[in-house]
Length: 168
Length: 289
Image 1: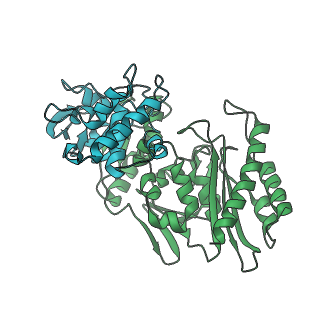
Image 2: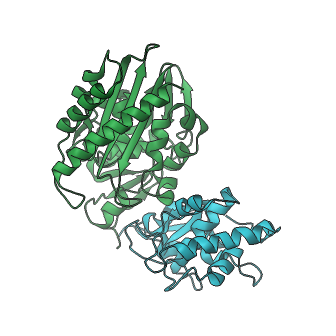
Image 3: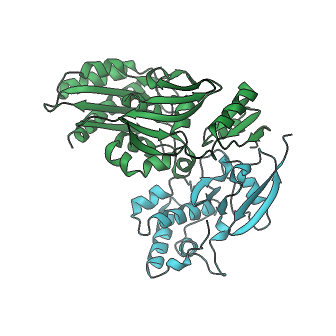
């Protein structure tokens, strides 16, 4: 076994550190902390996007990165979207528009949509579909996911910009 | 899936990375974007004992024009190419290519240099770089080597890059006026490898006569294919239906696809023919602007 290395990662604004084997995948590092199991392992082969998190402001698939690579970085996971007990407009949108059925893809969908809206606060339907093209959903047919994102766009357009957490 | 154990090394300079490569030889692999290497490690198709993570080496990520070349750094990500105004306006063929690689998350990590160094004929940049006549800059213990892309791909997953070398830069000759390019790919779904892909880069003179044509093909052989006969058939000619039809047929003849889940070989040849026709038309249209 390769020797363990100490890494420090800021997850949703909170410092976390652990001794990790180099081969530990980032997704397993994240899920090892109590309360951080929202990030899912889906296909485990870089296809499905259920493990999507933001690393230093950019979406990545955390099943395709080693935890040691994230040393010194900032992560945003789905648990970081809710602020002060209030759902993020995207989370609210997924709830209101039935943007999920089984819910397995939802954490990744939320993070990818979040990243999209940070870059483009008023995306077209095509841009939304492009933004979530790295996330697979086998239940909804994507229609309601698109509606959920559009719901959040509408909500945030009414002066809801402050709902963005100031992390990652 | 947990990859086999390895030792993790994180150099902060190129000389440090080269020293690690010298020390551990064949047992070491460079970790750049990792979007091909890590999945291969999970499947035990690669079992490096040492991973040399070059992601923290500064100064390796850039897109700039200098001395007659477009220079792209060894660590420049696909997402950076996709979002670069210079690439979008002056090198649309690279924009076309970066945009259809995998998906947004993968493009945030994956690099152009890695896409070439991996030596996978299913990757998209090789065809585009063949069309553009790019050069791969490799640094090793003896210094820098500039490798023309035409000779870079040796066989499946094998390139001219030596075990003790790192790709530091990709150079693309700045296209003269009245140049245009396009990359077209058919994929079954977003993120899939190409069923087939065609890259075309051309330069015409004021009369619309072809001066230079580069054509590269994706995923239709053991290595990325440079469609030399198709290129030569167009030189000195005016673009018309007959010239396009002939070049498209020659490109299809030069493709050597195998039948697999993405389709039978004959279908893929037909696809190369049609994509060549369309890519030539689009590249020509862009050259006019």
